[in-house]
Length: 289
Ligand SMILES: [Zn+2]
Image 1: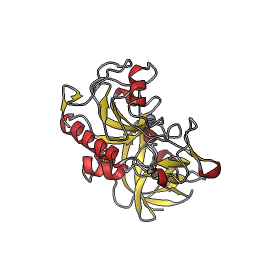
Image 2: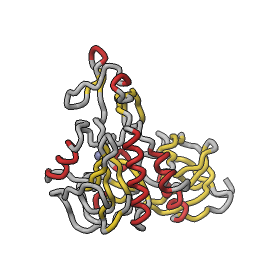
Image 3: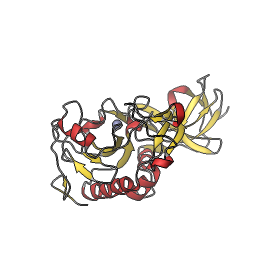
Image 4: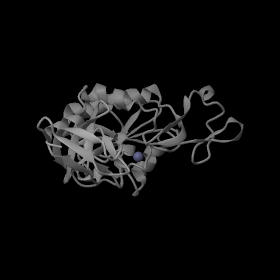
């Protein structure tokens, strides 16, 4: 795949009715269509509706269509925030992958999509690779595996986008930027493998955290003041990234400190793990204490 003049060459382009002004894309947000699997069903809807739109749609057989140029705003993320920055549609490219979304188990081995279609019994028999899974971000559900052709198409598309658009720096999901409101992509999506192949091994969120903070002097300690405990996070942001909860009263060595999205954060070590906590819920411990 090759991007030229904000369009992938050689794929269908259906201009979406909801196409906004010029943007500089910095992240890619992955979605599920949460709709029927029939080829072009969701794509054609997203092209003609004025309620939503997206840059790319990937069918079950791996066919990719484009609906919005990569330098124009599409309406795919809604209320959202990426590392403290709201309105992700203003700086992201959206990719919709055809998938029914969360399904529920019914009587007689049925597996029901939200519109009532039954993908059972057994799921595996139909070749859909259904799985019952629960994660903190998705909750509980029955989910359909993505077709290998879809995963290959996502990766090829991402490689073409990142090779041509120098402002792009991260790949994320709708559940990550709209936590508690959205659950796509589903838990079966190989997000970390795709991120590693497209972005390389270094996590851009960790790189940004290190670049935006300074090392603390050796021997600096804080005590957790929040009685109910304080979340240790992978990065200095409130996106879903909690490693564990640190009990109130715990004393912690401070490794780094920095200001992110107007809030002071500390990098600390707890139970052998390094992570980030909000400084406001701690008290510094004087060196003599
Ligand atoms: Zn979505």
